[in-house]
Length: 170
Image (cartoon, rainbow, N blue to C red):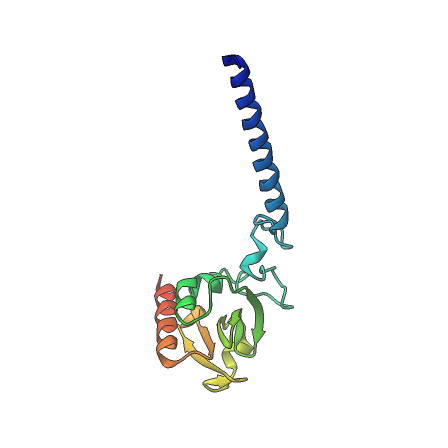
């Protein structure tokens, strides 16, 4: 076999291997969910991040309309992970009598951060717990928030409180 015949044979083998690898990569890509699928809100965010905030989605203006930072930024993922709520946990946007915000729930643990954006939130006269969740009222003025926890011990609540207070001061 001559040099050119051997080079042609090697090139054909390389092309076949490349085609097999490409077909395998396409099959794997088709089998996994798309990471860049835009959210229903049309804001381009990945839906794996949790419920996207849509202005007025709770029936009245929420934190975004008030010009406040998203609760996910005030209660950072690192602090949530330290208390046993994995970063992969999706949030839900909810309103409680004490505020509007986000809640993350995983494996019997729950953490949430709620802004007291409306007069009825600020006037709520409940105590330090509600529906089996522990509440901590933090901040002042228009930056009043409620840190909500369930299944988190005192040390974990201290970690979360410190993270929230650090982000409220910024």
